[in-house]
Amino acid sequence: HPSHTMDNATFEQEFECWFASMCTTKCGGLPSQADARKADLTAMCLSVEADWLKIWKMFSQEEIKWFKNNYPSDEVEGSEEGSEVHYKQAMETAKEVSKKELLCMTLFTIDDECVKWPYIRLTK
Image (cartoon, rainbow, N blue to C red; front, top):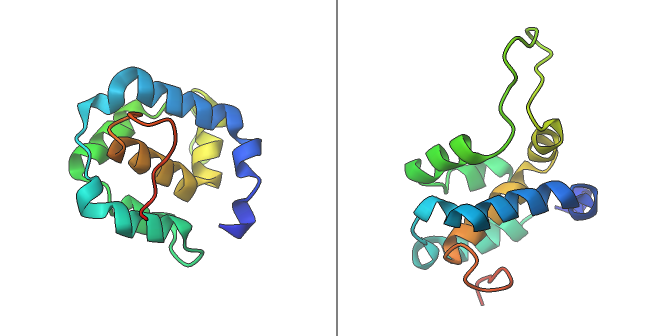
């Protein structure tokens, strides 16, 4: 998205942390769904009109569960209502500010068989 062109630099460490976590865990063994969704995923991730929710709806139930259990930004217990604090607050900030970009990166990584290639492969 045009308003997020510098997010890759702003949240570079956070995106690298998540990517490294996905690599280390081999994306929880989730199967690639590239054949079924790569074209639509590419179009939506490159579109300025598609928001993060459209990307989120492309996640399978298994992928949603894995993401929620593995993305490192759990809410810290005892936080006051309305002023939640998260473990690894920077990771939570990156997720909330650049949610679409993070979700796209996550699905592309899963669909590329969790880092079988050294770059994200878009549809031709």
